[in-house]
Amino acid sequence: MKIHFTTPAQNSYNHYNTYNSSKHVAFTGATEIFARKFVETQKEIEDVFLKNPDNDWIAGTLPPHWLEKLRGKSQNEKDAIVKKVLHAFRAAVKHLKPYNAPKTSKDYSKNGNDKENRNLKDASKYLTKTLRHFGIIPETNSVNFKKRKVFGKYINRGYVLREKGQNPTLERLFIKTFKKTNPDVLDSNYNGVKAETAHWLNINEINCKYISKIYWGDIKGNYIASEYATPPKYISPIVHFKPSYKTLQDFYYDFQKQTGIEVMDLIDRNIQPGATNSKGLYVPRPKEEIIIEYLQSELENSGLTHYDLHKNNAVIGTDEKGKAIVKIIDIGGVAKKIN
Image 1: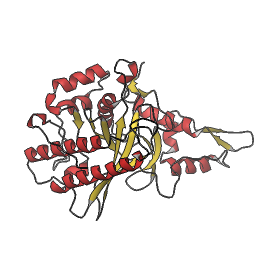
Image 2: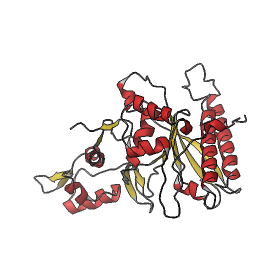
Image 3: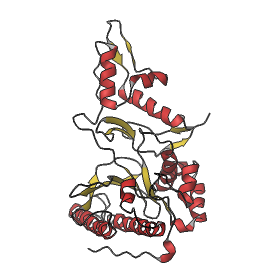
Image 4: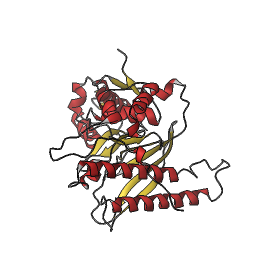
């Protein structure tokens, strides 16, 4: 099945764009507002987009290495290309939806899974063609959507998009599509595509290596594109502490190796990772308690808190050197901290 898509001229939008030669980022429209201020409620978020119609309900932009491919083009050319690429993403993600339904639903036939896989291939081919056309990937390379197992009250489907071929350089993306939410319930201020787009763009400004980055959110497309945190090589993606350690130093070494967090950083934040028992062995606290308390402290430094932070929202991923690092991968539930 072909994906048909046109971009009306009136749907052009501003965005913050590529790093220039000084490695600065320019912000415009809704993106600038969300980056500068934590816009709390869904109504306020909607008002930002309504007052910035040129944004076409998109905030954010492509990742740095994607934008780097546009070096040498004028700013107007960059703006036009990014606009077309993000609208192509909207069309591709929309094409994934026809069989985005539970197997028990009337919309899902016995061959539904096969059809969904074909849709993944169609969307991948369409997006590949677009990116080749604008020089973001070479003719030898392609991009591919792959469905991931995801769990959550608000997430519908999760996909990884990665470049394949010769010397791939593009950042991998996690594409999160959302279930329909009731706009009248309080949760819509903290969860769903509107809240997570606006709030995550603000959290980006914290510049915390322990929180995954959002690149953009598309309200009309009902999805967000964020950094994909991959499990580290040679280390389990799940932290496993021993029941006890011979010495405090043994635990410190194991904790840092598995999480990438310095234990002294925990101490500086008044987080007690465990205690020595009557036998002289060091017994750590439950891993979820330590890591979540640490991640909460990162948000609290910016006046925020995560009311739904649990082990499925924080993973052990890898940093740019392939070493283990804890990352918050879902900010649904983040709100202003009440003093």
